[in-house]
Length: 283
Image 1 (cartoon, rainbow, N blue to C red):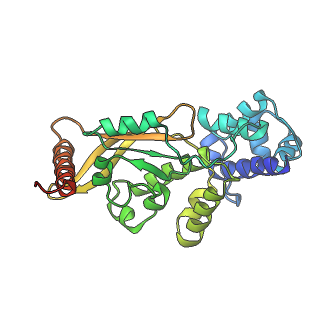
Image 2: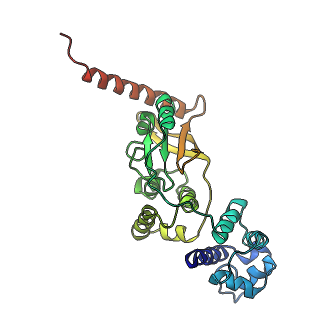
Image 3: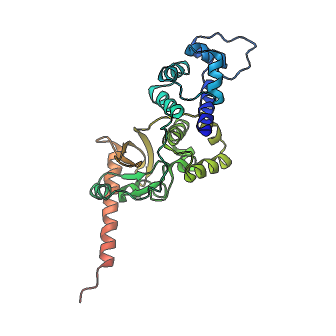
């Protein structure tokens, strides 16, 4: 229980450091040195006593009510999803035990096989890619293939150079990692620890404690000989697991649509060549 309460305190401190006084109608005095809001300001905005708020940050209060959590969410300008995250963090039930969920359901594998013109892959809660269909591997060689990790990929030099909006993408990916990850999972600890040591931007982004589900967006890909194109993507939770199915599509008539047709033809041609090579010579 003490670890859970410490997590609540870390979350509250991180979020009140982000909210600026003018964001909530408080005049900023010239001598102010506090980053974000003071404890007593959060307590006043939430309609609770400063003493009680201090107990929450120190982890000395157990099971704050829904009313208190909602009030803190409003005071810290949290959206509904982040308020729910705080509620589950404070009241328990935030995480399901981590598991070695490396096996993808057979029905999902069959679906990927049938999507010959739709790039798609399956990732786990830590954004490790478990399985990709051939078109996804062609769309993102090396980084959309089984064994790759999307968080590491986003913080790579190539992503920094070519992402349409790298900073926003990095914050989005990290927010999803925190929302879905289990802090006791050694794999999550490995990802966070490695990036914290090797990447100059990751520690500050992780320290914000942002949480958000990522459902849809746009990603840039270089397709030879077409060039840079933008594909839409959609995340779909797979029922009964912690896996996410990620699919890509292009707007009709767009350069990405042409790139998709080109990639599909390339994949089909490669499959035919492999089949021909595997066939025994005619007698």
